[in-house]
Image (cartoon, rainbow, N blue to C red):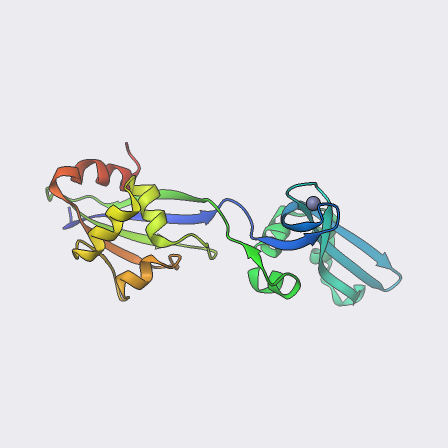
Length: 210
Ligand SMILES: [Zn+2]
């Protein structure tokens, strides 16, 4: 038993970043969603490849360049077969690459929802429990930390902010106020001294067993 109920939250976006592009059919700026398909066009020794996105309103396509007139022999055989097979791991890697996507589409839609999977690292005998949340964020997410905490702990955002103001909620090695306005990073660690009245159910929400 430790002093804290320690929970690890692994936070992943449940959708890829969506570029905001002018859609010719909609005559408007729309978000485009990455599907799981790539297009490959080999012409002699040269190869072009794209990841196919679709307008979320009308399904028109936009092809995001992956390779441009690249020499076939310069590619590893594994990479080429992954391209041709629409390998989900490759699609995942490219679709998640925000920096590269910004080369083609400077404006991106904030990724809406995230999925949080929970793992209890250590229980506490303390009552009411002190809560320690360790965030694992394998790929950057775009949800603000205060919104995430409100959703996951089933509290209002103003309640989360009040806990922070009173010092009952603190982000380790950062300014809590600033950290709450930003997405959590990999390794972000939070400490919450749970209010006696709500301690049990907040702890259950944090640990995911209720
Ligand atoms: Zn459209």
